[in-house]
Length: 188
Image (cartoon, rainbow, N blue to C red):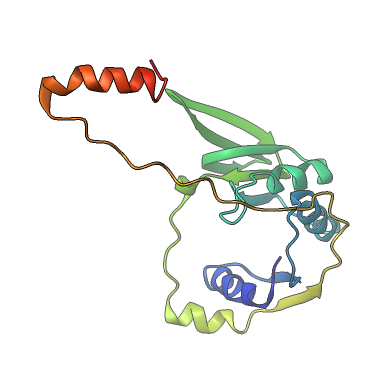
């Protein structure tokens, strides 16, 4: 889902092995991840699939919600932040990294998975694959986005950090540093 320039990403996916593509065309992507999820889920409702694979989060808004919301709307299981996925015999076995170890989760298919950056490193498409991708169909649909429940009123940058201080060198600077951390920074 996205504006006209999204076609470049779709062409790359077709070159890397996708059989067909649907481009939900919208010049304005809503700030509300729920609106995006509803648009995607509405398109997916009539299709048969085993696996829906989403990124962990978008780099533009960092919201980390669309994959889970689509899964909920389609009433299918969702495993988030996976680093490994094996699909066979009607189930997906995913691995998630957690602090100090990993968790293995099994889900019946169809299921949705949100992937960490480390799940796979895409290969480069060959020239032959890029040419063949141009022959594969891309169905373009103008999408009617559901009403957004969120409106961004303003965006502000954080205040600039104050400049650092050099309080001296070596052990002679320690008493001054401790005093400044206690009186000015109020961290000790």
